[in-house]
Amino acid sequence: MKKNIRNDFPILKQKMNGHPLIYFDNASTSQKPQAVLDALMNFYTTTNANIHRGIYTIGEQATQAYEDARVKVARFINAQDPSEIVFTSGTTESINLVASTWGVCDLEEGDEILITELEHHSNMVPWQLLAYKQSAKLKFIPVLPDGRLDTKTLSKLITSRTKIVSLSHVSNALGVHNGIQDIITAAHAVDAMVMIDAAQSVPHQPIDVQAMNCDFLAFSGHKMLAPTGIGVLYIKKDLHDFMSPYQVGGGMVQEVDFKEATWRSMPQKLEAGTPPIAQAIGLGAAIDYLQSSVDWAALRAHEAALCTQLIDGLSTIPSIKLLGPLDELKKVGHMVSFTVDGMHPHDVAAYLNNYGICVRAGHHCAQPLAKKLGIEASVRVSFYCYNTVAEVKYFIEVMKKIHTVL
Image 1 (cartoon, rainbow, N blue to C red):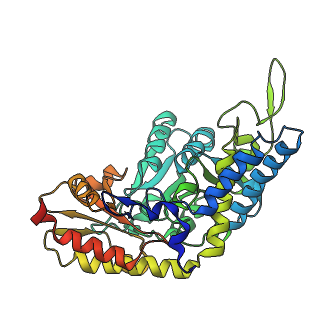
Image 2: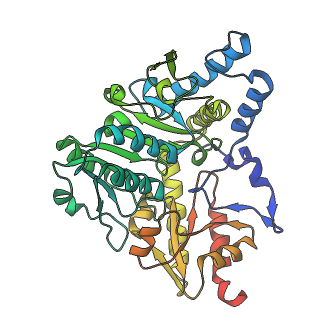
Image 3: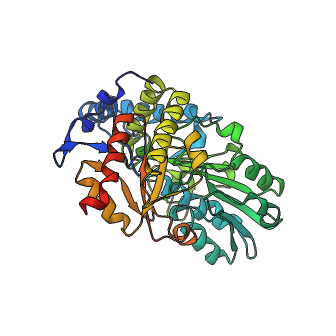
């Protein structure tokens, strides 16, 4: 990775509660490098205009920058064509879009939707609502006690009635890496579609949607150094003719009269209204930054080393229970979750805040998983490219004092 990469992130130079800011909540949202901040400022100060319809210089420049960002995203995940990239507000909207378009059109009474027990609410509730609306059946791949999927159940769960399998690539609550290739193969064997929630994988590892052979893939820009309010939905080109508009209005219509309307082709067909122009440009700048400053293999090794350091350190504190498959997290993880005996995770997070440390506490929008694991909530520490060994060492020292201070 780039030497002294932390210097590119202005927010990390400040103090919080009198201590250097230690940001360990990257699974929720990442910090932004100066290059991304500059791209946003440049757009708003030099090229701010709506896109696709302005026949004037800055309007055409804005359009070009927006579509250039789409090309960057397509190349970043190795999509076949930029038309396979739809810009949304984030992973949540991307999944809702698929459920509300493909799902409503293709699911019939008695059809089956398969997800997992470890999903984020954004990849669970849309399918619950769709199953209810279409009188379909929602099924779950169960979770083992250590948080891994019980894939031995696949042969029974995937049937001729299965129409879509939707699952996270990496769990946002436990950091588990799911073996998606076998699941994709099994789903396609019965002609089911596959959607991948890649919100926790795209920022941390190379993604190749063609090699993966998924039908849909969603991720958010704000977890990979880009602004909030921008997400991506990859839709395999073979499915474009089967996608109906998610919303209607300006930008996505080909022709309208007083009786009916026709739609533009993909991806504009699914991008009604003024899109998140600046945010998409910011996402393009984030991709440029990652490709120029971060080596994927080095990043994964760095994050796994921090997970190893944290797991080994917390394991020496008797009151702490670590969650998830720890051996796996030491090899490929970027987050570690745990509980502290006799303390609510919110109290742990508040304690750490006093020392300038930012962590996430709660059920991490995976409440059914928490219940399955027999916990109400947990503390989650999540890393990215700018976190350091010294920060983890300090964190462990602070945690060792928690019962003596509170």
